Length: 214
Image 1 (cartoon, helix red, strand yellow):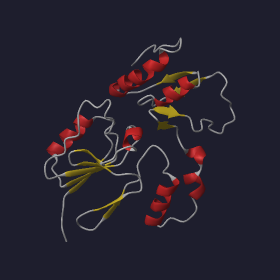
Image 2 (cartoon, helix red, strand yellow):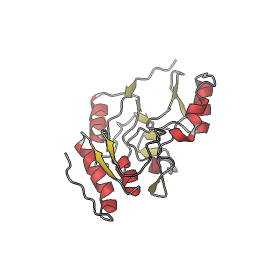
Image 3 (cartoon, helix red, strand yellow):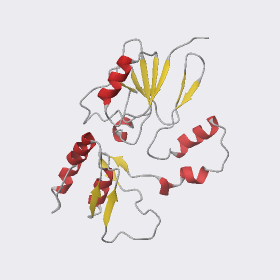
């Protein structure tokens, strides 16, 4: 049996420099990482995987899914590989890693792969494939609304949208496209800057403005 050192790493909330520091201080043959590292338009640090090592990651809720879905090569940085949802990786010792991803439910095709690999029954088929569980997705460089009704029958007239975990500002983009106002909270200054940059072009088309960034 071939033995390799494998380290599993949680999401780094876009702080790729922290991931680089961790890998530099903790040598391994293979790193498995759960995302939030790929946003090429805003990343100030590329992912630097040590020589003789490889990093495999699945997408989280703050990756650039639009860019990932259009990759022609899954090696996004040297020795750093994107693993699509439902894909598998066989480690040198024979163990198999299943990459599921984060943020949204998998596509119907990916769910069927996951279901078969994990020997699930049909109990969650409807929940995992029903369109009402799908979030807004990015198409042709812009966010397109798929379904915004949460099912509470509150309607969409007037009101202010509150997002206590604002991240990169996707909620704000959709809200502005609905000609509504929003309040967003985000603890990470880097994401505040990303959100501000993404929202500014839309805000300039309205009478609204960013009041404060904390």
